Length: 282
Length: 299
Image 1 (tube, rainbow over the protein chains, first blue to last red):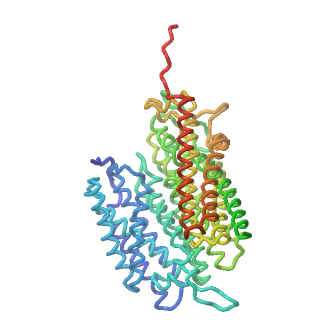
Image 2 (cartoon, each protein chain N blue to C red):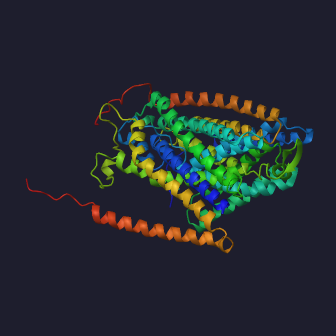
Image 3 (cartoon, one colour):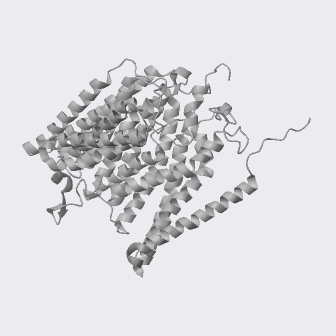
């Protein structure tokens, strides 16, 4: 049996965050598809922005799920989101233009099955389990797809599995130096899985505030985008990688400063080189 | 024959790198109170014990270290794909991964502490300034050593996995080794020095961690100094042995029985360690015994 231990008071309702995250992620993914239409790689950064939108939605879902004493650490939610999302994401990349839609549908099905297993077979009986795990799987698939589109320029299967190596000055197609062949997907998996859970894991406690948590998740997203942009330099044109990096850096700086401001607002005191304050009774 | 000698040399080098990585990883997580000791650091202010201990909760150690190492390896892989010298690529990868680790540390401390405002736990800016840099230094050593050993496996021993995937696997192994070996030493001994040895933590002592030092107030650097002596070394030996034995059995016995030789030797190693562990446990119980109540002496 589970007991709901915390409720969300005030703030933006979850439904709004869900719809905004889903819509923005899909729009971002399709804007990154402009690369294929126009025949350039400069729009790769839209993939990173799509991933950040999905991450913010996902971190709020974790908050809802973790309001019930589920008995595991918060990070496990990030792992299951990406573990179920990666299957849907890889399968969906075969569908070209329809990849984001296929990924959402397939991830939702996988998530619902996992939620059903957790609730009925493992008998956890948590009211929001099926809905939350469905959302988490979709978030995982969309985040992976976003960062993949950003690093390799496109979310289609052929783009993810072919790179090029220079041999004696000639450019040859190669599986080894591709996004999947080089297993950069392993790095992106953990970048996303840690970023999605860090917002709630770092801000949990009696003084939890929604705006602070969402700002932190955005910060983690932009930080991940920055390092993903560095990795993308190996696979896409330098101009596109530098553009992604600059957008990530600006977004990261803004959200980091904003997050410190919000922490200052919520902290009991903001001290520098001060001793432990005297508390009555100890 | 030359090939075997070369491979054993690489194995020894990888084991030595792993020992350095394990020790650095454990000291890093102890300074940040990550893993095992974290629950008590988190609990202390709620029980009224305001402290000046660094509290950087970034997931458990295995996933967090999985990310730092996979990130270092991924960036190093990308630079190597751009035809940059491997050593420079690994240094750049480790440097960027360390930057990410540092940013995550500061946000974790700020978030956790701000959420405890109800209990009067202040945010100490000087803690962020002085501890984060020290954890980053240790993290750099651990990330550089581990990515290097992954690169050795890939380039010198011909492991079929690409560098980032090896980074993910060995990063999780590194976090697990440090979390299981070194951290209990800090969580059980250092935090509860005021309790009798082996007494466990009774409910009444929950959150009553050691907060004052010989002179002044204790901070996490003291904890790092304390655990570097035994906890860090133990974690280093643990991870070093894992890497060394894993590569050793593969290098020597892989040719026997189409790979089955290495698997059988692996099972034998596990059995040998199970016997050793059991022997040590029985020996420790006999010598130190279960905790017994102090006998009431008539005064």
